[in-house]
Image (cartoon, rainbow, N blue to C red; front, side):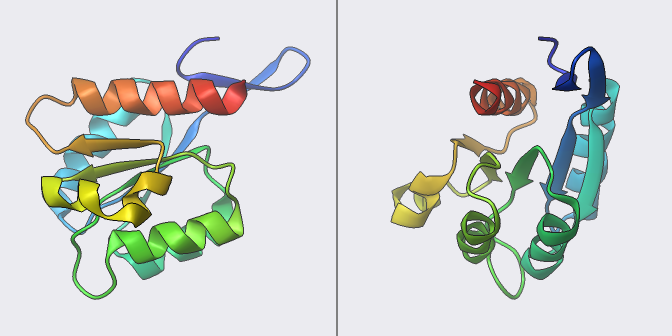
Length: 134
């Protein structure tokens, strides 16, 4: 299956929906553009609370989650995502490698450190989607 389509029934296909959670507007814009170029439909959230609301309303196919954000952090949102729908893959995307040691981050499907090279993030998203389809 192509990285930008998900089978819904028979031969029908719909774009994969990505919920992108990051408090930095420049990061959100850069990731959004890159994801849209790959054919994903992107919903944006700038906080953990907004992300939980999007998760409840939209049920994305995959979540890209920043951890260090003002107010609630991404790990508290991750806990709620698991309560809402544990089948939705979550890719943590953070500038702080120390969070990898936090046991809550182990519930994510991937842990990617932010970098100017977006390829590891794109590969983690595609792998998480592929695993969810199996």
